Image 1 (tube, rainbow, N blue to C red):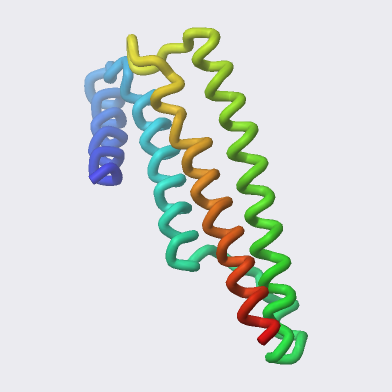
Image 2 (image 1 turned 180 degrees about the horizontal axis):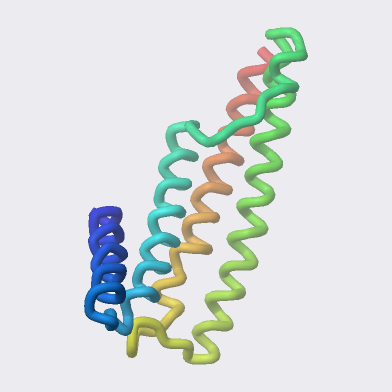
Length: 140
């Protein structure tokens, strides 16, 4: 649904600008917010299903019984990075709230930016749990 709204809004902005030399004042801002939300929702879904992009050259070079080692290192690294991004984006959202930033007219920006710390925290949790599962399963 969000993707449909995004495509429809972006297309209408293009038509309005090229044909009528005008556009929706809030259109570009909403398009950027929709892209942000879609990207993070997609990343959360990919982390749930384990369908993220992987570069697994090291997993192909080590023996099959030891593939849990590079897998666990990669997942632990991803969990740490997502945790750091969650923490920093929480600081960003807090600053946005403190400064009273507004988006789309009168909407507090921090409400629309909450997807950042929440999304990265969910991904950090999932990768941390998956790291433990791989370590426990790999050592058996």
